[in-house]
Image (cartoon, rainbow, N blue to C red; front, side, top):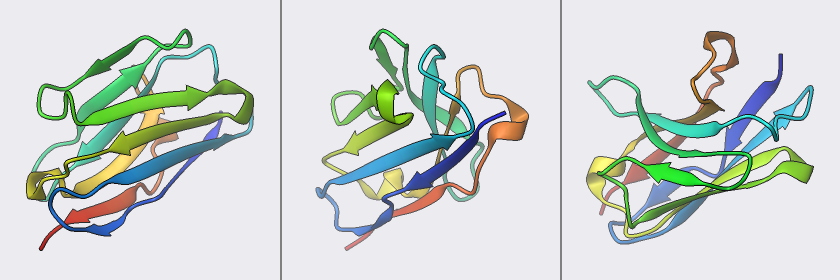
Length: 115
């Protein structure tokens, strides 16, 4: 079992950018499909983006064209570059495997988009 720690969240204005990082400890996960998830207030957690070990990516329609997921397997790290942020992007962002494993959910990192 790996420990996943998200970081990089914060308060940004609409249209701003932010880069989130997900660092894994315990063992290398480079051969797994990884995903970024988010849970907005009053909503269920949803998959935002995913990336295979080979770098193939997929995005939710709500973020496609604005967010970019990437990974550095040597560093056991997954990134989410967010641009053109909207207030509706406000949520706690999590990383996990895809499909997610229940025991791997961490604390997430808060992203707040507000003017």
